[in-house]
Image (tube, rainbow, N blue to C red):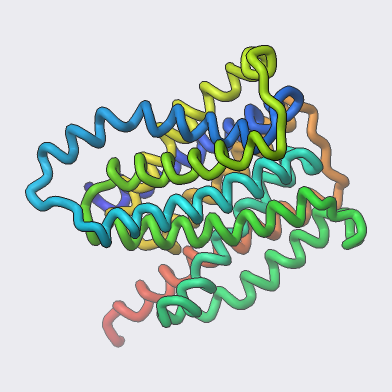
Length: 298
């Protein structure tokens, strides 16, 4: 697979995730976040498991204990990102959630510096400042207007950044995207289903009322889109993957406006545009400077 094809795969995953924001938001009318996330990823794990088994049969090298632990670490990051995003949707809009989640495009290179000692292009720093300005404008120009859900979604973006970095590292080193997917789904689901009975009630009526949303995000947003993510990340870099995945913000806000009637204050749309511009700058400017450096001297 070429890098262009991989990026198109990541773009498809982002489009699917954008639609998932609507389902995640409407499901909160009936079911609690821990039950929802737990059931969502349980369905995803079951759906992908047969394909992971076929992948294992064809693999030339068996996975080690260290590989499985690495996959479980991705699952922990997935759990932290998914549950903070889901709880955040209780008190924020689909539009805000989709754009604020896209901040992982800035967190990915920042975490790479701290954890991996890989220093990013200089454009990261002004892009980070622009993203913070965009968040401020999305709140209506007053920090007091940021809801607890908005703040939780910013935390969620940090954990998505970790998940993207770890998934990229471990799928590259093992070449087993489906095994990684099943493991991260199972870990996330088990943690949520262990916590859910202590914090939320569940009944057949609750599950029946939200089964459409659970099936969509379980089979499509999780089972399909996350598999597309780890497959695509085998052939591209984590910062570049983050750029294409962050386009879920556009799909999510568009569908939120069309289906749920989400409305931002006028200055909020300026904030969205600034955040999206920062996302593009992180990828476009380094690519332009690399091409310029390759040009032969006159």
